[in-house]
Amino acid sequence: MNRFALLALLLALPVTLEAQAGPGDRRPPSRFDEARDSVPVNARSAWVFGVTTFTGGDYQPSGVDAALAFRTSGLPFKAVGIGLRLGSFMQNQAVAIGRSQGYFAAAVANLRRPLVTLATVGSEDNPTYLKLELILEGVASLAANSPMPQGAVSGIIAPLLAISIGSSGVLDQGQSLVFGPAWFVGEKAEWHLQVGLRFQMPRRH
Image 1 (cartoon, rainbow, N blue to C red):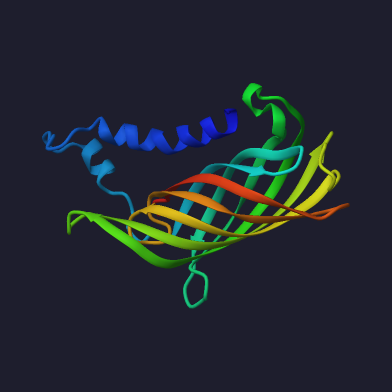
Image 2: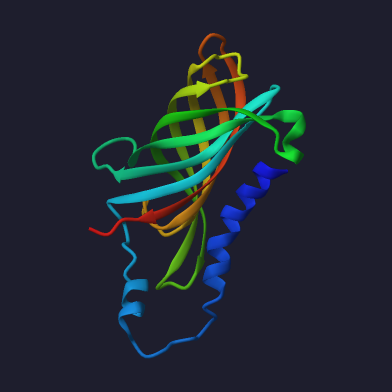
């Protein structure tokens, strides 16, 4: 199915690129090695890219996300993000052949809070963390030729859980599987299940 193949590709690509380096391969230092080893730790901001889809109903919005997130201090939530989602409406019974109808553009804002570290793997000098996070997300969407019962102007409110793999900081480099219920509002209100994959890349300051 097209949308789930896209989710799997986004998750597999960074892992494949990392594996190509090979263990124990240390060349003489160069400016390229310095750039590769200078990924920010406990970053203050990050770019977040991903794909998002929904289940349930005859049609569901499916699209790509791009957002900018900022680390916060002294607040219950550890990061805030704002971004854009672009996509179309996929027919539930026809995802294998990629049939879609209409297009949408949406503004997306979210709040993130790490809940618990599930596991730590790797060396003591460079550990990788498996974490469970809470994400509260709000979406305002404008659609053309929408088949959804919410109409051309709609919104989504979603309390989500994320299973994240990466460094210790909330905005350090990593990947997340995101899922949870999503409340669609507009001319008609209804629930859907939201699923997505997101890749996070810290910004250098």
